[in-house]
Image 1 (cartoon, each protein chain N blue to C red):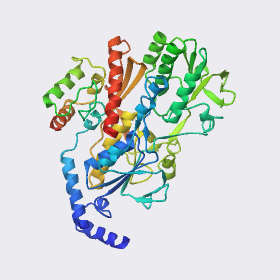
Image 2 (image 1 turned 120 degrees about the vertical axis):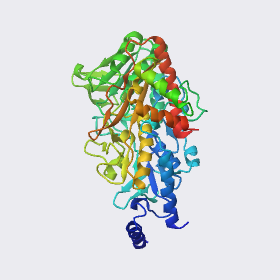
Image 3 (image 1 turned 90 degrees about the vertical axis):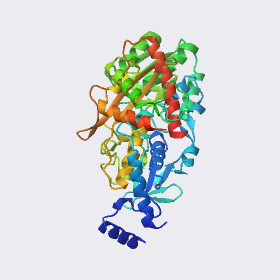
Length: 94
Length: 419
């Protein structure tokens, strides 16, 4: 590979990575919500779940309609728009 | 080589085709990560998965990582130390070059890292996650030798095993003291979780024993939750605050004494958590300021003192974010995307980070503090209205759930980083 094509390949790979980039805040979620199905945890996975599900759960945590241990405190840190973007991104993850 | 590279840069810049910083020798940019803890190992892994063309090298002195979160359960005899230990095989298998060597010098001008064996690693961007160093000059009488008698156990591994052994050998009726430092330090609720779990062990195995926390502060993380639980569960646990004369001013390992301004405590087991600062390589690289910690740009985590170096995890001054493993992992994931964007000459998206810290007061009694953070006036600050601690009046079922989630969190985060 010449240097020029290597650089071009990198620029393109970055462009591709950015298209799939997680919206602000989304990367933090996988600290508790496991990305891998092999992890044994009572915390439910969110990867691949329908966006509308994630969004409505977050809305219920935020308003207090659904009691939570910690998600009620975290959901309040995101606007509805931000939550929607995070939900859509996780829904699209395989 | 240098000249031709520079000419090449000039040509491509003139053609306005490619951003300059991304152009490196070989294929793709070179990113070096120093430190294989929660911050560094996460950063290396996500850096590589986010852009496979990059050459990512993770530099770590030890072949085995021993996690601090949950290590207090080892002290209480709830689990073996080996459950805290992780290797770097999976990270290496993901395409990261893992080098088990200490980083001995950073040449910020020449953009390279020198390793213990003399190898020089050039970089386009460097991510430093050196964690903490204990300040051996921070508490009179407490040096590396003293730590063999009065363990800190604030870097897990041999020190954790030593403190556990001392607790096991202590006679019933003995006194255990935990010396807690002033802010800032690694894991703000850590000393109090430790006190709780040691008290749990003593209550079951050595009920006539006493536990004393000698504190250099008047307030601490999740304080009311801890204190309420202590009242209920551990009557033999006493917290002595700064204003009550709790600040330890010197220690004598031979006599097993801890001196405060007004008194001297003779104890059977002393766990001394001394003042801390960013890992030594941060001072050498010039990214630490006079406080001993590393100031960073809240939008990119790039050092405010040295360009092309990013600092994450416990070593960095992260505004409102506490020095926790969850924070380190979240910061690392953002940092990897920021570095990727910057290498491509793009502006990174604004960070939005979450922290969640679980503490165990007993095996079935968990509490948390959480926060959401974003840059505000140049500092990573709490998003107003979000975050906070577990409810003070939560039912027992809630504490049990949080204890279960704590364990789930540990499995999840270590799985993401090392699994």
